Amino acid sequence: MAFAMEDSTKWCLLKQGAEARVYKTEFYKKKTIIKERFTKSYRHPSLDEKLTHRRTNQEVRSMLRCRKAGICTPAVYFVDYTTHCIYMEEIENCVTARDHVNNLLDTPSGESEKSLQILAEKIGFSLAAMHNVDCVHGDLTTSNILIKTGFDNIILIDFGLSFVSQLAEDKGVDLYVLERAFLSTHPNTEQLFKTVLESYRKKANKAEEIIKKLDEIRMRGRKRTMVG
Amino acid sequence: MADVEDLIVQHNMENSPSYSTNLALFTNVTNCNELRQLIVQGKLEAALLNACMVTDPFHVVIAGHKAFQLFQQGKMKTRTLHAEIIFNLSPSTNINESFKKFGILDNTSNVLVVMITQGNAVEKISEVSKLINGKLVSLTALNTISDQEKIKRFTVFQTRNFDVAPYKME
Ligand SMILES: Nc1ncnc2c1ncn2[C@@H]1O[C@H](COP(=O)(O)OP(=O)(O)OP(=O)(O)O)[C@@H](O)[C@H]1O
Ligand SMILES: [Mg+2]
Image (cartoon, rainbow over all chains, first blue to last red; front, side, top):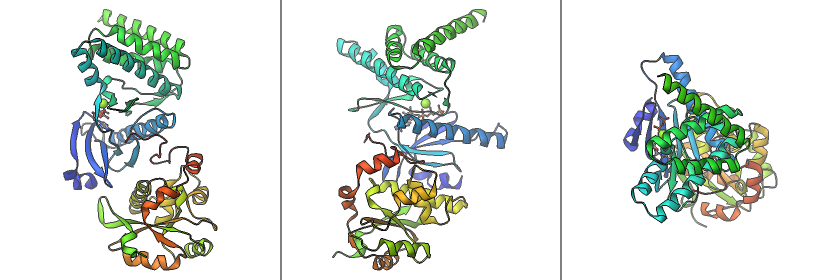
């Protein structure tokens, strides 16, 4: 840990999460975000080390896989596996889709409505492109989507729980996770989320099968809550 | 001709500031055949890159950073620190292939010299530059000599470690 400690003065903490800290810094004069996964004391040390390593690895691999497929994610500059730090491009002048959507919902107008529709479409297209290269994100929320001023595309981040899978079931769960997160963070947006799914359907391979799975997963979810 | 000192770009190693990665760009180089032999014989300790393959010096500095960390940990994939830099720049996991694409060939004329040194690098680079039959120019000239098409073809937008994506988000 000596590395991270030594330089921590230059690292400005942006976010302290349950499994990771996100810092803003400069790396060879480039504005850089560092995501540091930390080990958890209550877990078995060597198991913990493995798990942390795996998350870091998954995150990096998926980011590279997505970028290769033309999906916007931050460029990965450097990975330090001894401190579990990912050094990546800082997306400047960005807000989370969560904040962006809330702002638009707070200021209802024809303009806002149109922006929301366009955003929903972009989300659907990006997720389809991601699933088309068999990348399942694992933690889709509007907090893990960034919107950059003046940049047309949405930017996907936070791939720590991602994995590679061809299964419609896994992709369906991915959509379900987003749906739940979306509707609970942004109440009364059922129509908007439909737009996400419609544009997803236009671009995703095996879209029908995946959406069918999503319906099944919803049913299961409902049954589970009814039983209690 | 400007001083060697003015034309070398030095980046102190993050986390190990007593070391630095130094870049110097040469054009019109005519003796790459000889330079390659010197490297093989261990008489020239530097990474000599085909400058046409480098779009952004930042990528080289990062490759140096990674090479240095692996060197310290004894985890390098190649035999020398400078070879490791060339390997890190390449998307390929094949060392020979990486050298062929990112290192110099006998007929290479634009050469980017990369040296990781401790302390002041000027003296060491001056020595190396005496071996090179070519013209030391400002690193900013890289813009005009990178072969964008070539890079696209070879690197498939990224290296194993970081990427040189075709679109810019900055
Ligand atoms: N490359 C980046 N550029 C700009 N801001 C970023 C970048 N990466 C992350 N952020 C900011 O930091 C926040 C947290 O990042 P991230 O979602 O990766 O971490 P996390 O949610 O703590 O991770 P985890 O869910 O794995 O615990 C983001 O919501 C975003 O505001
Ligand atoms: Mg997050």
